[in-house]
Amino acid sequence: MPQAPEFWYQRAGLLSFCLRPLSFVWQGVSYLKRTQAIPHRAPVPVISIGNLTVGGTGKTPMVQAVLARLKARGIVAHAISRGYGGRLAGPVRVDPRKHGSDDVGDEPLLLADAAPTWISRDRGAAARLAVKAGAQALVLDDGHQNLSVAADLSLVVVDGAMGFGNECIIPAGPLREDINGGLARGDLMIVMGARTNPAIEMYAAQASLGIVDARLLPVGAAGLSGLKALAFAGIGRPAKFFETLREAGLILVDTQEFPDHHPYHAGELSKLSMRAQALDAMLVTTQKDWIRLEVPWRSQVACVMVETQFEDASLLDAALDRLFQSDIIAR
Image (cartoon, rainbow, N blue to C red; front, side):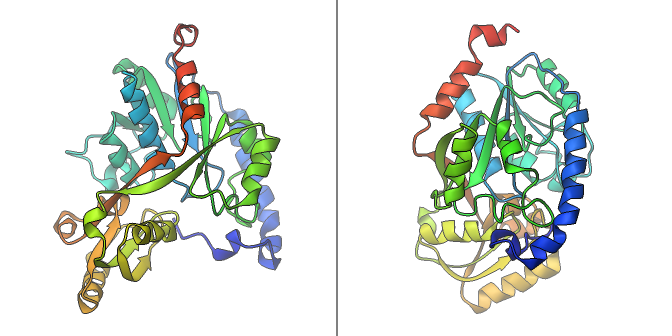
């Protein structure tokens, strides 16, 4: 997936205006898909985590955070993902011992460390198998636009700084769908990072959505503080990861951005390694990127994981608790 163009996150200009006819096509096709979908109603609570924009909001760490909160409640939750970037159509349960990112995608491999995880182009089929395997709850990764499984709780993740970009739909902007329409299907808005974009609160108020503020913090990066690093990343918003490293105290002497889900090749990694050596720096990347590296390279690159920290999770916890009341489970 190519990197998002800069004009998506600037005030709508001429290029965005010229692309709007194609946005209407995208919007129409997406609308038809949603209206024609026949959602599978699972016999267990379903939590959908998604966003309204293309990539880079922190969906996967949020899925991990929700899985952790369910586990703390004694609930056996399974994650379901499309498996973007993987060759397997599924449904298949992810096994990190035999599956690589080429098989199931990078994000499902990360989720499989937190809970049983299934990938499938047909999420309804994965949901059926997950329940049969003992799932007491299902967490859908990137499920907001995919209505093949009915959700009981929909969490919309928004980047606190970027918000909804220029508020135009692909390809004129970063939106997958109309803001108001997308938020109307949401139950809570999760804002990742400082809430500096004023449009966030405005749209949340219009949709009567509660806001849960959160941020991504590096795990175990304290030992890297003060070290020089060449950081690279192929995620939705690499700049966000680089800023996280700086906040953790790393001295970034150089950075390199790659497209989201980029498959790394030995040649480009060799160039990065030589550049790092010339700068007397270490190579650093995200967990999502690290898992896409060939095994021999993993020992040469430091992996910095991130986790979600909530400022106040009371709204989220209350919503989760309501899901597991007896009258909902008994349906």
